[in-house]
Amino acid sequence: MRFVHCSDVHITEDYFALPLRRLGWRRWVALAELTVGGRAKRYARAPQALSAIVRDAQAHRADHFILSGDLTAYALEGEFSGARQALGPLADDPRRCTVIPGNHDVFTPGSHRTGRFARHFGHLLESDLPEHRREGSFPFVRLLGDEAAVVGLLSARVPATPGLSFGTIGPAQLEGLAAVLADSRLDGRAVLVVVHHAPLTSKGRADRWHHGLRDAEALLRLLPGPRFAVLHGHIHKRYHHPATADRPHIFGAGSSTEAGHEGYWLIEVAGGRVLGGQPHTPSL
Image 1 (tube, rainbow, N blue to C red):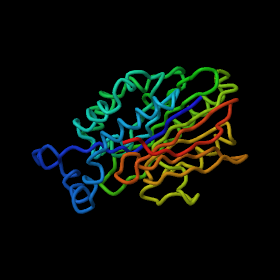
Image 2 (cartoon, rainbow, N blue to C red):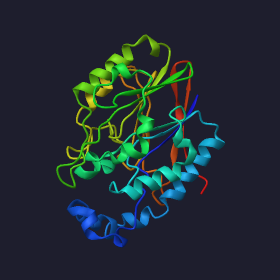
Image 3 (spheres, helix red, strand yellow):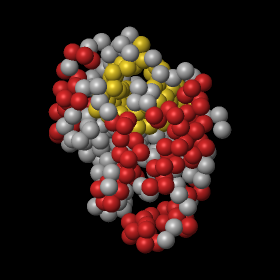
Image 4 (tube, helix red, strand yellow):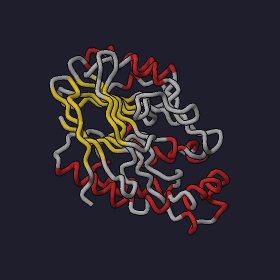
């Protein structure tokens, strides 16, 4: 089977065309990143890049498309709508597409409280093994053919303040993941676990305290060897740590639509194992 993995597409509205009162103080702070930091310019063509990755997935005859969070710049309704439109009909079908939220998709308490992500992508959180859910829709499981399973986890939490972007899966979801892995319906399948925050940086280290996945070690202990892979985003670098006897493959998708750094992984699965992946640049 063949999987396309992308992340951190950051569809970005025109913030200066919106009333300041609609943005809220958290996004007022973020305006510096959009302007002085250059984020708005780097993601000006993000919808076109995401649509190009979808077209590439079709050209590769990929069996499943995975987007590991940060669909939006700062969780505006129009940004979620733009991401949904860029994905097109692919995102109608949970058998073909998995999407989870990233920290930018829960950037404000209001966006989380009103279920903004779920309004556009909640149908992709359906589970083939709903009895193993522990926190809302998570973990959810997609059984694909006879060879693979995709498991979605939630690590994105509403930050106390902009600048704190660490992630936590939590003991309930980790217990649910352990129950999923013990389920006989996963026997003989490769398991691709999708989470937003990175278990390891590109250098193979734990990420910074304010940015990393707090329970990364607990996650990796559950997933030993090449049967397993963790697919993540959050760190805007594309990298792959091959599996070892006691650790899964780790695929960081980078920021798939950032100008000059567009790209995604094409991951191959066969015989109940993750064989590896190849980085690709979309045909823009």
